[in-house]
Image 1 (cartoon, rainbow, N blue to C red):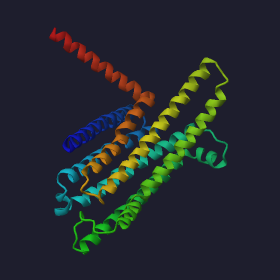
Image 2 (tube, rainbow, N blue to C red; image 1 turned 120 degrees about the horizontal axis):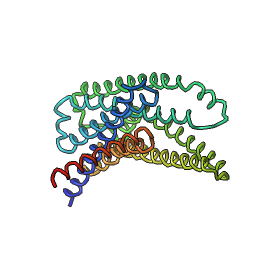
Image 3 (cartoon, helix red, strand yellow; image 1 turned 180 degrees about the vertical axis):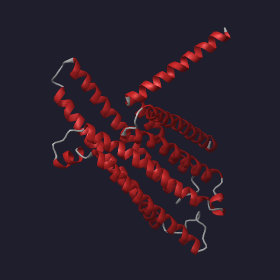
Image 4 (cartoon, rainbow, N blue to C red; image 1 turned 90 degrees about the vertical axis):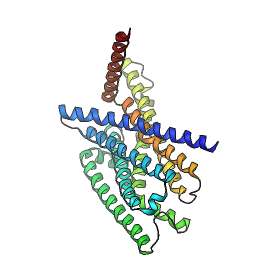
Length: 307
């Protein structure tokens, strides 16, 4: 029975990874083609970077997870964990940064508040992205330095990195310090999404008394945007829950089902949000419909040749 459950988890994780690579690859390809035809916009840059970073993140999640499941001794006998740790920082930090930048961009462009700080930020939207880049670089450098210190401490003790000979409290404190930048991006993204939902909800309430066709279409657009944002928040929270489960696995390494469940939960966000973006963005949605139409035409041609 245990083997069957493990097999189901592995199948689900692989399926999520395939969908994630396809969905994010499609987003990146569409924006790269659009960039070749026109000048790359801010939203195009963010979406392209988000897609590439998520593909990279998916490969790191799968590689690290499968090594821990099938051959954990590789970590103890090589420097592979060092490379995985650094790659994880790059993939996780960049993915979170692009997701947060996307949330801030939509918040400043769409939300409507009379608050002075909001109006000041709204008038300086183009300055927010460079500030976020600086914060990302500082956060990543600090993480690299902290990881190098942890790994060096283990080497000085002649201990293997894989055997975490420390108290659970010490281990979790180190994990929190390692993920401070990610926690900041996560919190900032949640705040901007919640504020944007509040703004859309307030605007939607004001428009409910109007029944003209234009107003109705705007109301539907606002409701759709709120659904997209709520879905994003749910996936974002699931991603962090999955990360917490995977981190907890190191304290109970005999329970591989816990790791598999953590991998499955973590991988939902990179592929799920990519399809939400495709359905919620008019340019991406139209491109996906054209691809589906071409696939249907190809299928019909094959059937005609067979008959």
